[in-house]
Image (cartoon, rainbow, N blue to C red; front, side, top):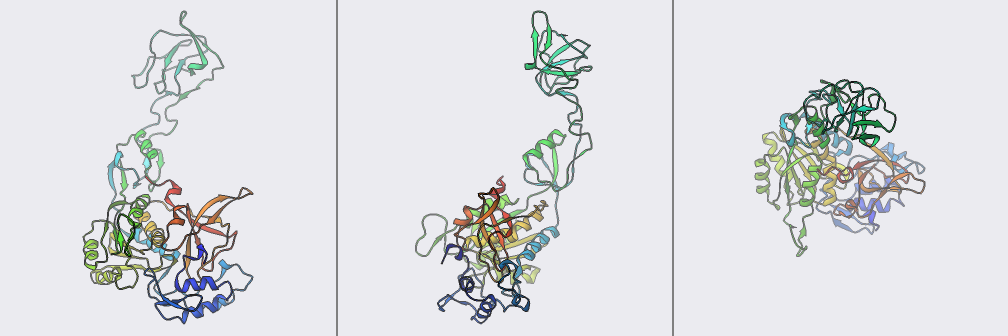
Length: 490
């Protein structure tokens, strides 16, 4: 089995490995006849599904439309079969549902000082409260001059930034001036220090190159006038935005605050330090999720390890003050998977599952629930790459909408290599961008992309969205950027 096949477990693995030799429709029929909760490897032996995979019906038989998919057509153009289980949402629909959930939550804009606004989103347009600059200023250290030269000048420091209005100049007069200082009335230009020669004995100034009227003067209102629209509502407050707001006269900004998140790590088998031993494994998601969620615009209140305790889960979720609770593990249907039973009980008091599984690999047992009008729960699978898939599928659009961040323009890139696909589900495959011999950019699929692996995603700068049926070399696929590729760790 190659590294690229590690991602697909159970029935999916058999389908991916054998599909090179058997028609896809025949494989779906075989998968449909499998007993629930078991899968068969290529040798015909059955084994239990891993914990990440819920016990759900196998993929349905191909529809008549998919039967028309001829051998000469692109693998990515095949019509997908029915969902693996009826409740699961298609991947684009799941992302849209998460964004809708965020948009329908009540917004609570607040006015905050500039030093607390970084990373938040403007709740109103940024308009200039003053002209910029608010007076004519010198763009360079040098000499302010009036009329043609040579010019006479007086001894002294000259004009400095931050001083009162200077006296006007008369024709043939010059005065030393610093960058940012007010331009005297009647001045016609600024000569840079390196372009002038001052005779200190005769107090005469000579230009060493042509002087153009208005040179190196920043006129009042050059950047904006009072009331000008500088930035629209929905703009993310970056360090540059803070600087612009301060220059434009603001002490505070009306912003949509970052949504708060609490992370609950589930699993009795997890260690927080040291080497794995005695069936225990290191928790990879605790260190991964908090910085990733911050890069998505969230304020992470806490990350807690709860083990597999249904009462601890219930107490933690109901007692959380966060806008979004993110859980890891426990989203399938195993004996210690407590997230869905908790939500079923919470439905009695108004909780609602908005996305119950997604047709995506890895990570299909992920879910999204509304606990209250302004509180949500994102349930991520416990396998690391599957959890990353859930993070980008459900948490990212939810948090983006809650914080009123703009939706980035999607982009596509050709893939260098063929990528095996799932017959029914979308696949998210780690890729890195490379430039080929011809200078064209393409996305290179990375190995080690199984649901429990992080080696591939650690080397990646994006995830390729592979449609059901897979993609051939040269096909253009949507690419999801990763935070470190966007420089978003602020």
